[in-house]
Image (cartoon, rainbow, N blue to C red):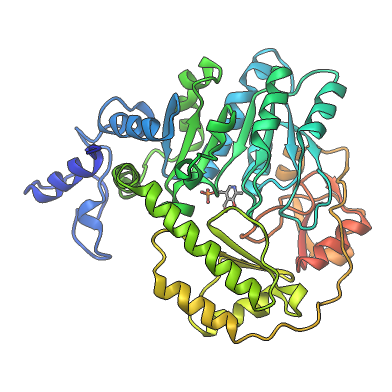
Length: 448
Ligand SMILES: Cc1ncc(COP(=O)(O)O)c(C=O)c1O
């Protein structure tokens, strides 16, 4: 049985009659209920960014499960891991006195934009083809090949977001092959795909050739919100492994949550005991549910197994309307917009919840499609400001429909999906303003 050193330590500390003359201020007295288990980096509890005791032992368990050179814990989500990954892959360029350049698929989460601002990175966006939605950017290995072969100097890394918010998975294997032929590391935001490791065969980015990736454990595994991994491949540059911890420390709080660390720790044992089988059963049930929903006349997207994505616009409803109907029947969706509703399930989802969802959907009668013209993603129009300059410049909030010609400041897009339509430092064009309106973004931060 896989051991759980962090969980065991905290349990025995909570059970011992020790007077807590240390932080946190609750002193283990329940107010919320979980306080007895909420400790700080006391003697024996190890230190997240100088781990050599129970945290290191637990991370090694995670690394064994994920088949990585090492899997570093984050208690601040993939957001922390994204900043850290980008700092690691650009360290070489910085040490050579160059401004690092990243090639990135355009559907990046805003955590990526903030990381670029903090690290002063330049980005060359790849748009893919037939992008039907803001969150989707279908990059092919061929597109990567032509971008890399045309580059005067190779970028510090190629950055992909896969799976995306609508459940599409990129061709990591093909893209990794091309990247490596050009000596370019592949960085993957796998925030939505921690569970992919436990499919048979694994579809986890590290197994498919990514050098480094982040997983939000909390998004698809039974882990508390905030729990995430920064995984480093056994094939990645040795330097990443050596510098990862101190790099994470630059961006992280010095008070990591031990509730989240215990949760990550317990997850290791949980996943080592029959998780793949439970996941396969769950994926089967969802496949069956998707077929039943399609049979009702709804357009169910082809996605990764744990997402159920319905293009509700094709059946005459906005995603928001559809989600509201589900909410009134006690089923809460992950995300909805004008066209789609996104629902997420895991092996922890009860059969009764799946039944409730199906019954709620079965009450809806498909209608004629909503007729909205396709609005493809528009290429960003660079201004004289870099991402960093634009994010940190004095800015003001203006109505999006009056922002044409202005330069985008901090990324303004709600979470979820938190994929910026216009990126900081880009000039807002007419087509960008139309897209903002399509996605319901009424106000935008622009540089003064
Ligand atoms: C694609 C993507 N990347 C990164 C993140 C940030 O992850 P976290 O919330 O774990 O910090 C999210 C969160 O929604 C996301 O959807």
